Length: 254
Image 1: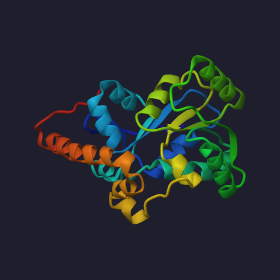
Image 2: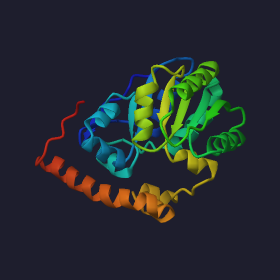
Image 3: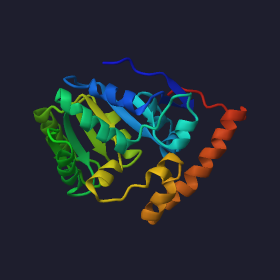
Image 4: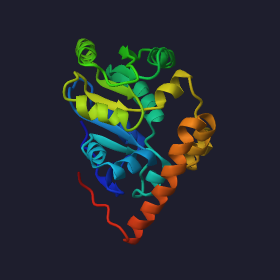
């Protein structure tokens, strides 16, 4: 396992200084291990949630990695930081992990999505080892459901348990359960389940690189995402200006 990278401060959230290749290699190090922790893929929305909720900020700051997802998070980092975007990390790890026999489990998504994701990825990456899928209900699992899920994971013993819920739901789930699940790493990748299963279209690369993916996503899911982006984006800009000018301190910590 490679040493974990340093972090830089974005509004009190410690974001890992990473490239996509470095993140991929750190995740590959989970092969054959158990209980390493969880990885948070953190765009602007997650950082704003953390600013409003100290418990959620603690979850991000205690992660194995908290990656720079949205381009504004990347732009605030030191030289050399790259976007580590959930859908890209999933593909990179699935591709490279075949050489070491990395095993994968998919938890999340709407009914049928985890299975469709498995089928798409196995077709794209021959030899990929997917050892299980689980589609949770749209509510917290009952105790008996959680017991059954833990038993499934214990039988499969995946190196990587990919979690496809929404933020902050997926991060709370990972933080609460990574110690009790027989997996190497839990990685919350949210919309990657929908993108790579073919359920939802991804933004063109030029929009991703220019920080305009949020605009594309509003166009594809306006009722769900427009209120989020139209609230969080201006608030993020205001808070970053306050941090950069010293008008307000956002110390790292839990």
